[in-house]
Length: 152
Image (cartoon, rainbow, N blue to C red; front, side, top):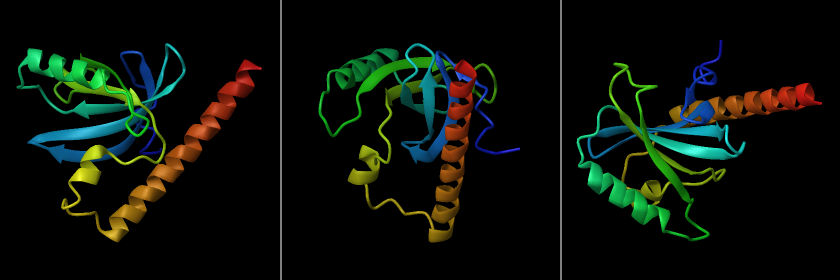
């Protein structure tokens, strides 16, 4: 069994085939980034999940989402939507916040660019992480090829 396929059968809202990309901590929140496919248009998207219940004011979060949705720049991934879900919550009841962005292959997060003082992973950990991402990418390509063959 593959660790990268653990969420491949899970669907969160209209997104499925979740593949973990990065884990991070920001302002006391654990963040997880996934690559996923939309059941609505078949496009690839980046889901940014904030673990656990949100303690921020809902109006503030919605206002921030509206502001991001207005940003249009060729160097910034387009913000698509914001939603909450209990689907991946450890306790099964906490509404976790998901930010959805267009998927941009081999991109860096704005945070990683602006806050370069954050300690980098060790080279061994980075190599293992890169190997896992590559293996997951190959598995996804194989799955897509199989799906295309089944459709023909």
